[in-house]
Length: 252
Image (spheres, rainbow, N blue to C red):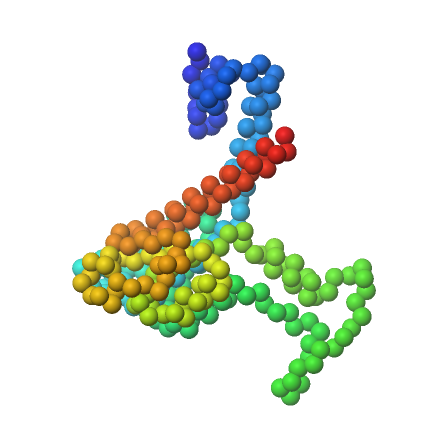
């Protein structure tokens, strides 16, 4: 029996089909058709480049990483963390949008800014603090500015958006950031550099985020951010692969 030349590139001989796909040997014609379908599905998966974005949020005092209690948080700085995550994300076809703030409201505004669609001001005039809407007849064969804005927003909207958040001290206090995450419906992974449960401080044992998080990573140092990135990439890739395979099977 011939052996597969390359499993990664999907190159194989007809006689090795049983090994690769676990089925009885097919006739030459049917095998060739099945092979072409598999190659086509594989090509569709590999050629798909969805617009994927991760909001990388860090809370209070994390701007001091590298110098802040290095025995607990290590010597890696926040810019180094962002650089490492961004470089890995490029390999995974994911855009990283980093944000750090020591202020609760700023983090909430950042989440809102990636959720809310800007409201068009077309057809609205403002005078002396009041606004009035002027009605103009729009020909049926033209698209209004508002409709154009809506279409542009749809085109710019990422296929996938998720959050990696280290709320830091807000982990134990911020109902407001928790509510903002729930209001925007962004799935999120909660990350902590240290193992907060091993810190010996009882107030650190409660998180306002963990029960709503897709997952929680702690105690892995700054590698926890990369681990969270890899999780989202794997989850999205698996979903895309399953969806493409299902679509292809229903169309054949």
